[in-house]
Length: 246
Image (tube, rainbow, N blue to C red; front, side, top):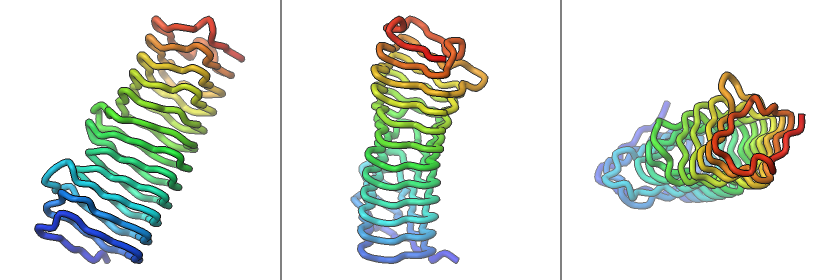
């Protein structure tokens, strides 16, 4: 059974060097910076969705979270953490750095942003709600993960994606230089006005719809065990400099 607490009038909370299990905390007027440092949280629910402004921030540093839910209308920053089977929902910026994530679910609201850098991500599920994410950076290794229903504008996606599913996603005005898509399923994935210098698509499946590149720069891009018929190229540059190996 959860121990529930509502912090009436409080604008932030702070947990440090604590072990917390099966608790639910909700801030009624979140507006400041809440901190979780050097903690172990199991089955903890933190709700900051009643924030009085979008400038509220939750920081999680050097902590371990299992089976937790964090919801906020503000921003969430996680660093040097270990997370498994956690659910995160943000309307601001979600930033995760130097952490280990396993079997986690991220929900991005319209206009929110995502920065995932220098992490080890296994079975990471990222869903969008139909609005463009104006900040979107992915770096590191993503295995057995899922990206679904995302609209990405101005992104930096320079990562390794292994056995990862991309479905119903549009990426535009983004840089994917030196990225690797290896043994991925790319189902209704569209790239508009993107750069792929030095990137590789290897042994990928395309589902019912072809992989679409529109007005993209494909110079130095490699396609291994992907037939050109699986792709659709519209007004792209550098196709002659791209390589296909069947």
